Image 1 (tube, rainbow, N blue to C red):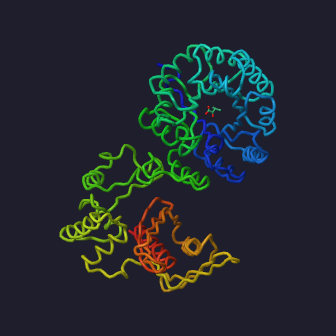
Image 2: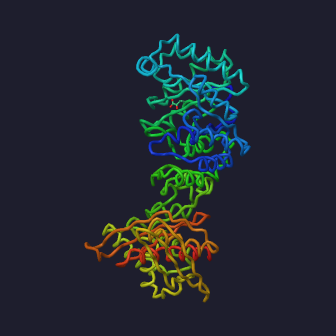
Image 3: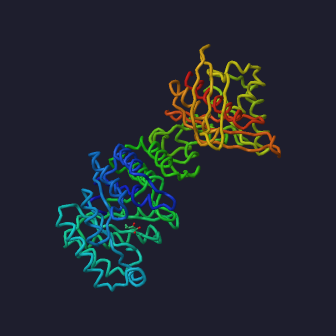
Length: 502
Ligand code: KIV
């Protein structure tokens, strides 16, 4: 067992460097600063802010991040080349992450150098960076496919040259937990400085391998928000941190309550959506539908939740559908202030199941309209805001613009906005006028044509979420896509407002 067993694990976040290498992702300096601020609030120990030598914009972004005077150590990536190291030094980083490949395959086909030459370059690179008074972390790229004796020789040499930490990158994600445990244990025998791990997810093993390396004594996992990174990405921060905290009862400086907000911010700025099934931050991670599960959850959340959603800044939610049970339906309706009798719940449940059997997704508004029929309620009881009117204009030479009028407590409010299209501008206009009441984000927007032709009936399904994690889904059907989108949005906002009123 490692002597550092009880040491805090230090989180080395590389969302802004490796994460930005995700195909198709490119962040502006302002976006990088916004993410860096959030990562700092989250409590990561190191922010790898970028690869300075790649562009002037990258250097500018890193300088902006340094100006923020964040608590986290700011690191820049560099090959073991003077030009790369100088670019990082010119940005004023606290730490330079220098790397050179050590596997024969990289030496032969990429670097066209022999082992002795690479060893010398590694030593020179570390010495050069250290001469300038910065912290140095050394990575042997493709370490896990390198000859182990040569790899040890390189790590011993860079430690001697002054490196403060070494990193073991599993560059193409070929490790297994057992192999990673053994490799870290072997490297630990020959170096005294802290060991980082940089695991890729090509076989879906990045988190397991990272954790196995930590078990063997590595203390600095390289991670990215949402698992962004080259190809299948890297070990996701949210998963690694939650495993460390919840399953190992060890500590990091991460404030886990900010995990979800950070994940959403990174997804919005990078344009990379989060899969619904993704652990911790996926839409379904704290959603329950089946009757057996919702019953258990409502009695004691631990029955089907290994961590409380609030721990990572989320809320649990229950979905009505063909697998639902009476307890779930009752709790959903109670959230809205409705108190159906046992008989009414039975009737509503069988209608929900009938919809589910037809393959339909049952939104909150579907559940409410079924319940309204069964409980003989009027729709007026479910409205806080009312759509009075809206207008949209769009064309080739003008920005799509929408104005929306709503009524609240007998008073009329009007808001206008522009957007990428009429629906987007209408959604933004609604957001503008309702933002004082409730800060709503549109999480999901689905448009389906029910019939063919240009007069097809449009079925719009939306999901909205407020800043406290309350979620509501809504549906509207009609011939005019913009109108049904606006109606679904207003309906979703009403559902959230009603939940908050309870
Ligand atoms: O994937 C990799 O090997 C890297 C190194 C530079 C750490 O990104």
